[in-house]
Image (cartoon, rainbow, N blue to C red):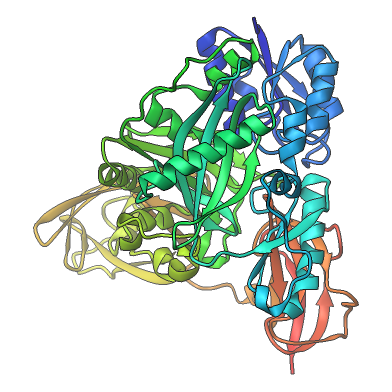
Amino acid sequence: MISTVLVANRGEIACRVFRTCRELGIRTVAVHSDADEHALHVRLADTTVRLPGATPQETYLRGELIVKAAVAAGADAVHPGYGFLSENADFARAVQAAGLLWIGPPPEAIEAMASKTRAKHLMGIAPLEHVTENDLPVLVKAAAGGGGRGMRVVRQLADLEAELTAARAEATSAFGDGEVFVEPYVEGGRHVEVQILADTHGTVWSLGTRDCSLQRRHQKVMEESPAPGLPDQLAEELGELAVRAARAVNYEGAGTVEFLISPDNKAHFLEMNTRLQVEHPLTEAVFGIDLVALQLRIAEGEPLETAPPTARGHAIEARLYAEDPSRDWTPQAGTLHRLAVPNGVRLDTGYTDGDEIGVHYDPMLAKVVAHAPTRAEALRKLAGALERTTLHGPITNRALLVNSLRHKEFTTAHMDTGFYDRHLPELTQQAPDPHAPLAAALADTHGRSRFAPGWRNVPSQPQLKRYTMAGEEHEVHYRHTRDGLTADGVRVIHADAGLVVLEVDGVRRKFEVARYGDGGQLYVNATTLTALPRFPDPAAQLAPGSLLAPMPGTVVRVAEGLTVGAQVTAGEPLLWLEAMKMEHKITAPATGQLTVLHAGLGHQVQVGALLAVVEPT
């Protein structure tokens, strides 16, 4: 039996595997980069091993270092999690060659399905070899890996070569394999997948469907199980195809077979992921099982029951990202001061209060899962939990998630993979509480004298504070009087540094206020504000045409031939930044001359750093 498991991963999935191992009495080993030295998964493990370096290429993608760590720590099994080396057949072989148990499918099965091109040939599907105008739109995809890396939609034939080049570069960086292929792009399709589980005795379970249609940049944002509105016959067909794919490669362990369902309910095979999926908690909730525990049991050679358990209810999962959806999904970094989710939902996370969100890895903070007897109840439960979640730190997609869960197209199950392309502006609109700035200002007065210095028996001048909230500036006026604090139209019932109670039109409302350190950021309930100085600093002005880094990251590409003095056109790509597994294009703000270029290939930049200046003509 397994006694000690090393998880060849980090963050949320490492924490999740450790949780099951603890319940089963199995010791745990974590590996970590220098950037993750104080990460939650490191703190949870019984034993830890350092992987020198910070980037994935230096650490979590170094299979030989991880195998060496497992041997040194006395592990007898390795769980790959998802991402990184989880679908790398050579890594699986190296684990086995070291005398360790591999908690995953056979290397041969990984090899057969790891390349999307080989998987399609196995299923009798051929990629497009020669693309014509009649084939458009098409999708360029990396043959290895996943998560939307190396994936591009091409709608103009003239753009194909440039997108192939970009996809190859991104795939090489992410997976060490630059192979890409082209397939038809299904407009208005739904992304539906089937969870499978197979033991070493010939039993293969098909564990229902999951709908993963809500995506940004071809990466999933919201998932649910079972896939709503799917005809019974189609759901059965998908299950049969998934089992067929598993048997074709003598599969063992947990895996997922993914499909794109066209508007006329035709199934198009996409790929088979030979690992645990990010969204596996949905299947666990609906079937009442622990997939990680079953993975361990299968690895030990134990058989599954002849038939899987019965599905019950509906589950929905939301991925909480540190990113700004309103600014092209720009990843965010910084300190996560507070994350607290109400009881009644499942929280899978790799962070706790005070942890730093770095720039080297995926910006997902957590997964929040709601399970209920019906889909409508699960939707309401998850939206309410996210709305009441205390979340203090970098900008997140929390508002987008809540708005998505309440959007008519989603509540009626008429969504597809183009959902965010159609609705992003309305989904990112926030209705911040108009009384939040006043609550922030009143909390800031706590500890001061209730009377202004030099108080006299005449009305005092109103106090003034300025904040930015949801991108807009707000001024707050209030007075100190004999009767306490007053503000126009609002009665102040209570005010201290952490709690303000206001009465508006006879209705009392509570505002919890938090501030961390000496920064200007304040959190009032679910609203984030930034305190502004009373008088702006004139030295803080930037030259027109200045390009600032929208996120901390690394300059991975520079436009060919770009030098100071070059003429550029508005919208022309100049630089590409990569951070948190995403690539962000920096374009010229206007047509003119490039007068400053501070960013070169490989440079590390911080958010707000001056990258370049384009002097408009």
